[in-house]
Image 1 (cartoon, one colour):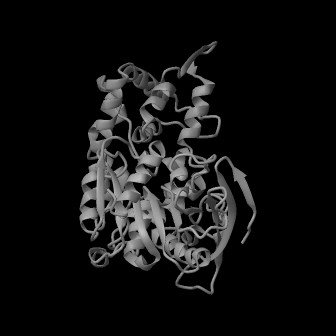
Image 2: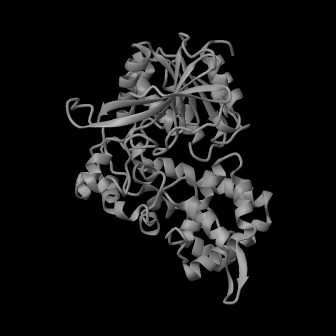
Amino acid sequence: MSAARYRQAGVVLTDRRFSVPLDHSAPDGERIELYAREAVAPGREDADLPWLLYLQGGPGFGANRFSGTQAWLGRALKDHRVLLLDQRGTGASTPVGRQTLPLRGDAPQQAAYLGFFRADSIVRDCELVRREVTGGAPWTVLGQSFGGFCTVNYLSTAPEGLAAALITGGLPTLDGHADDVYRAAYPRVERKVRAHYARYPMDVERAREIGAYVLEHEPVLPNGYRLTLEAFQSLGIWLGAGDGSDRLHYLLEDAFVRTPGGRELSDAFQEQIGAALSYVSHPLYAVLHEAIYAQGGRATDWSAERVRGEFPQFDGEKALADGGALLFTGESVHPWQFDCDPALRPLREAAELVAGRVDWAPLYDSVRLAANEVPVAAAVYHDDMYVDTAMALRTAEGIRGARSWVTNEFEHDGVRAGGPRVLDRLLGMVRGEV
């Protein structure tokens, strides 16, 4: 474990590394490494402070790389020593991707390995780390999005490790299948797209023009990504963030340039959209996204792709042919992405096996949650594009003593956009001050 200490404005940081079993049911077997960044306020490096563990959204993303006390971190440092954990397979922890998975063997072996990177394994990692860094004292966990899913698993399996649980945009369905999640999601996505077009009516025609060009040419972007109409539509994932509508507008407004060969997508547009669509930095998101809902003996079986067929308004070719507005899609993973994205192509066979797996362990214990004694506070965003509000509130009702703050002030990234206020509110709720 490294103890290198360094400073940024308003914060003292220490790199931490931990060794944990790949398979927690075989503690003497293969081990992997976890990386975490400890943060504390200047002058309090040696103080006896309560710990706050941050679990990032995803799956497949490392913890935020803050500059100084950005977002919620400054507020947390007033009371806590913070651990920003790169969950297994992400960030500077032992990596998982097209370069490393072939070390596991063939596709079935790769798929079996990927099964160790869900919330249940992450929480067991956290418990080993907690005992090492706190000396056994419970800590507060702040879970954003998928990090909130992990936090509910924590409440289900190891509540003795928690002093409090803070959840932002991350209350999962306890027993719903991925199909239920996406049937609820597509109408929310449509509302977000319609709201975007109401805000930026000029984007209706711009999106149609770009979509028609992509449908005809299917250009290969500079990073090797094959841009299809469905891939272009998937930019709608941005609309779940507070600044996402503006970002999408700015991307669409100057997509074309005139060249000696005619009108083409500009190099700048192709560079930006290639970076937006590629999973090169977070391949676990693509491979395991639907698996975060998998339990109960049913395969996910490319749920988002199958359920999309129940919503014909998202058929891009039909919208272009009929003169209608092209609808963008949201947070979903589809098999065609493993053909379009060079970072995912080598993972296609393993991803198919993950999608077909039926023997996933349960993630949540409704009986234990109903008897919960850990203080829990959750920010529930009223029309969150990524996490269904009705499902989230049903889950909150199933966690004894959980308090929900329902707000339409923020989108899914409220803990980033309004971090100090959001975290302050949740801390006040678990302390009984609000």
